[in-house]
Image (tube, rainbow, N blue to C red; front, side, top):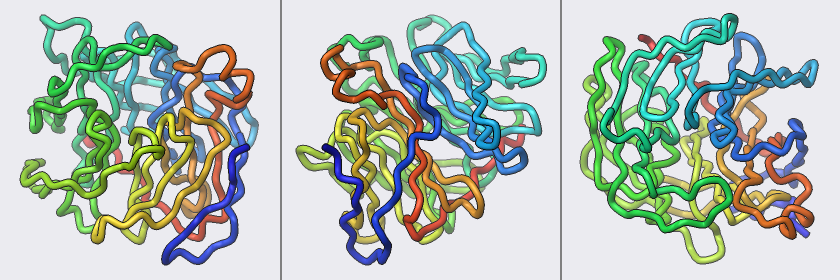
Length: 316
């Protein structure tokens, strides 16, 4: 049994309500982004190589399949999304289902791929890149190569700059409300780090550990920020989403999910009051899948008593 309650410090609220709103067994749903203009949730299924868009009014999920595994998606102009697939960055036109590729990385390393990504407050796209062998393929448990990951920024003029290297698994990311601090998850180190952020240039400097996950909490994955400046971190293989105070490094709240492989989270819905949480079925045995019939579903968590920050759009 999974608890649906929330143990909280400094956050007064009733027990959150958790509902599976997209009841499909995604292999690895990730990177949920709320598109306020259309009132829809956009996300990816990495291992199925799909970009997905869910309409909460009709319940319909539309998909666009790509050639390579797609690590993340971000908002761009209306009807257009920035996608990070394989080692390429491109603009997906939802109407035509065609991608205009705008940047390529490491052409001599075709097995590398982008992972989690997000648009910064100035309209740049920041995403981590995984070398071959860093992440396990599909459900195979694999050996993880340490210190081989990088973090890149795509600027509006199409140029790409590597700002961080030597990472384990570059994953969730977001920015402080004043845009002066960059938060980033390195899954292999089981930690969330804070960096000084130059909003004018996109420069990242002065790393320090903000929060280190303890045994039993799982591995940190996707992440988002609420309007109080607190961090919400999805914990894969931990079956939970945690809320952390970046100023004190204190754990404020734990929301226990009905699935173990919790991959990412972001706020959406009216006034960004709903927390959308993605999950994965890949990585679970057949026995585990029988115990977790909702594995791979996308969930909506309500009654949290907090609001999220609207996502930024790429200004390319």
